[in-house]
Structure formats: structure tokens, C-alpha cells
Image (cartoon, rainbow, N blue to C red; front, top):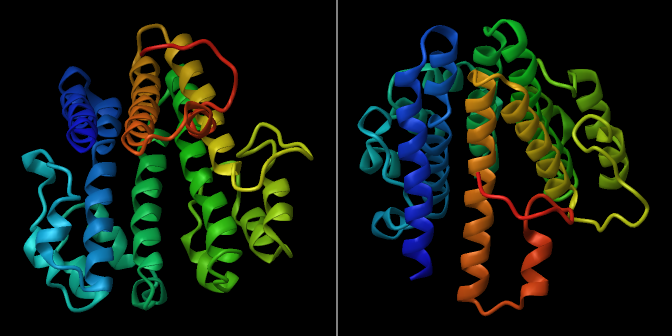
Length: 292
């Protein structure tokens, strides 16, 4: 079935990422150990959404990814949490829980699950940037832009969705800024203060987006940002001399490959015509098909 195919694709990717650190030492291993935490965050977001909507645990469980033992969650306790602080307290000890507990209380206590989910993304990305920043030499120069791009896609999403779709005030979104990227705090603040999403997106051009034109379709900016991510991942994969950049670039390309395959399988399940599926694929360009 489409669901089992998607589950298998994601599960294979998690297992692959989880095995990578055993082949590397030092700061490189420290960075690779953090990459699978992204899937722990995704499970936490599913559970947080379930708590907010009162969804029964049996229904939530169908949407959870099976995690390696060292990333396993007490899903029952998390699903039964009666407040954001209680939810955070049931996250396993480690950098993610520590960072969430240190976030401003206003981020955790907001009634919308948006803020708790965004806070988890913020903490994951801040730790990702910190671990990449600890690298040295040519590998660092290839990996930092890739990690920064992922954080800046988050910034763009906060501006476009949080500010202009959910109409959330800038002062509640600004604390979610991740330092150390191509969108510094003052530019992010300006994006949040812009009059509309188009102006905020324009301010991100050359930093999060390679380019936008007058013909750019509204709603495609995030896909264009992920297209830039693919370019940076491909650069790291090809320019690193069989070093850490090759590995991190590969993981970025694999993630987008899985995302494309999930999109394709879902489109086939719903009998969506190919011409409607194709615009949802990343990168958004007429390039030759490639398998990583």
C-alpha cells in the first residue's frame, strides 16, 4: 500500500542515518549523531498536535515513526501531558529538552500548538548549527551553508506562515530566530515587520532563495528554498574529497529523495495526474533524474 511504502522509505532513511556516526570520530560524529533527532522532533510534533486536539492515542500511534532505542520516546506519557511544560518534561534528557526548557515561557505557553512545534524546530536547528560550527577546515565551509539553509527555510516559514497566514504578532515570533545563518536577527525582524508575504520573501532573496521573479507562483517559495538546499547539498557531496562533506551532503540529498518518493506515492494513491504531481517535486527545475 502507499502508506506502507512511505513508512518503509522513511524507516530505511532513519536506519541509514543512525548507522553513520560509527564510522566517524570527533566533531564529525557529534554532528552526524544529531541528524536522526530530526525524526524524534517529527514524532514529538505529532504528539503535541494530538494533545492540542484531544486526538486518541490509538489514532496518533499510526502516524508515529519507529525510532532507534536511543531516540525512543515515552509516547503514552507525552500524549497524556496536560500542559506544554509537562509535555517538555517528558522528553528524554538531552540537548533538545534542555533547550526547550530554556526557551522563553511565552513560546511554550501559547495555546496554539504552532508555538510548541516551532520551538522544537528552533532548538533542533540551533543545536545543528552549533555542532556544524565546531567543525574545521574545508568540510566546515561546505557543511555550514547547508545547515544554515535548513534554518533559514524555517525563518522563511515563520515569516510567511506564522506572520502572514496565522497573523501572529512579530514579538512572539522573533524569539524563535536561530543565530548563525544568512538571515541575521535584524533581517528576520524586518521580514516580520513587512506589510505582506511577498515583501518578506523578497527580503530573503539571495539568502534563502537563489532568485524569484515576477512570475513566481505564490505558495512555491518554500519549494524554491528547498531547491537551494539541494544545490548546497550537491555541492557538499561533490566537492568534499570523500570527507564529512560528502556524508552530510548525501544525507541532505537522501532526505529530499525520500520526500519526493513520498509525494509521488501519495499522488499515485490519489490518482493525481502527473502534470499536477510534477510541480510538487524538488528541485523545482528541469534537471536530469538522478538517484543518490
